[in-house]
Image 1 (cartoon, helix red, strand yellow):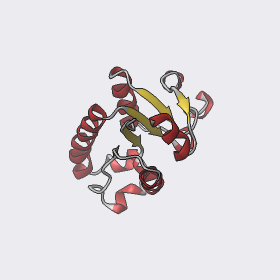
Image 2: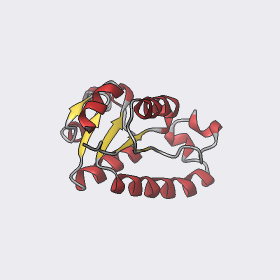
Image 3: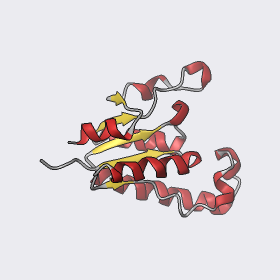
Length: 143
């Protein structure tokens, strides 16, 4: 029996946590993990809020290519995992979620969507197949 491949989507603000999650998946034997490429982003930009990053012309020029590049990773994967710590999904991850849904993928998420009082969206939560807060739980679904 072969293991399904997974693409991980999430915000740049959780770059370190996403890297740790991906490393754990690989250590648990997941052979194919597609992950966001945050390496193109300058470290000083990662600490800023999106509205502040958008003030940079260079950032605005790089982001569309990065999102498009991640769409290709989504196309190749069997399963999508949304790393939405504290229920947060930025605009780009929301696009990726919609793209994965349009591809009819099974979509797992780290946490439930935030309540609308705290900026959550009612339409994203319905796209999650299941909430899985540990890499070990995701691995069980990939076999």
